[in-house]
Image 1 (cartoon, one colour):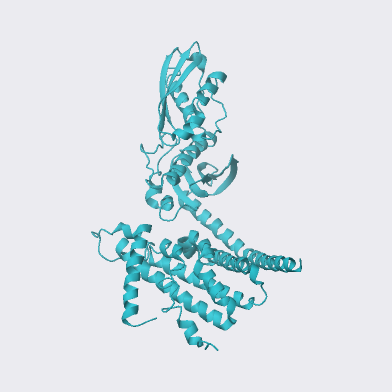
Image 2 (cartoon, one colour):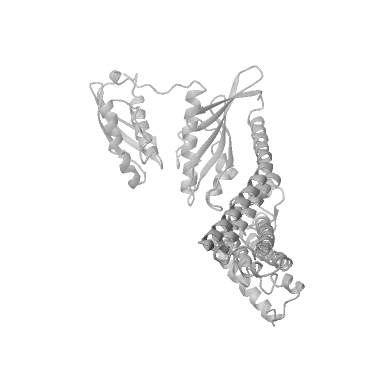
Length: 275
Length: 209
């Protein structure tokens, strides 16, 4: 008993001293680190937005946005701070948008991707491909942006999250409206459309009869099969059952599920008002 | 009674005779992981050396207080504390080095050179000897990382003092096609193997044992 006590007390004391030391050092270094990150962020703001005068902060879901105004109170851009799960841990980065929703800068704040492999996301070569892209671009790996072989998960994580944020910014801050599809105005017929999933394009065929969606088939996709079965045929069934695109896509394969919904919308959108 | 080695021997043995990397083959993870560039290799070596010296001192001071059954967890906590302190200090005061080493700094905790010296030496010797041993082994560790990263950066990148574009020197002109293999982890093993062969033959030649 005495022996056990001695062992536990030794361990507890060592642990306590260590914790005290660490919190002491952290008290000194944390403000310095925070101040530097703050000033680096400021510098980035001034670099991306030369007219920068003041900003307003907003949070949508898990993304943070600073709306940038110039001296005459005009919205000149948006700075997004995004945290995205990469291969190992969260990748935090800034995306700077100009007033038209075009990306003017990508800036990795912190990441813990594999050194020498996934850390390619922090290189200028990888980031430059996004400059000038906007919500009007597909932002699809292999089409207008490249994932990097060997670092597929890290690079795809950045690309898919950029695609999401680009649309969030365009819809919420820059007044580009979300697509509204009026099913009853659609002529009967079979429509095809594509949208990006997790890996590549998902192409669907949608049959509309009497103002209702009656059938959705996925014609082509390159999603990971083991994940894709989580959202297909479930997601099409949900769309048909509810005759709505407002469905819960948080499955085990959220990006694939969302890709299917987007593809169906894309198929129908091309024909809205096209009578 | 066994003759105690002199302080000078305590200091020098870790540099060549018992070099933690080139002779004992300890701490292979950072040795292979961060040696693609000289700057990173030397930075890692110095950071590990700082932890090694500090933990050797503390472990030696505590050697009569810690019961033998729980010595390993205590050593690990001591080492982890110093590593975390170094990480925070680097991030606050040397952000450039922190950026280059960032993800590797926490790995120092499991660098077996440090635990090895704590267990095999510091826990059995007086503080002065432990510190000298730490300084020597730290220099030896840094030296080995410097050698390996020199070979790897010159062959694998064709540069020196990279990857920072402000300090990088391209050694062979623009047309040089570097041997990428040596920048990769597999190349690290190959380079280390070749380096060990060279070091062994040099040791034999000059009779360092």
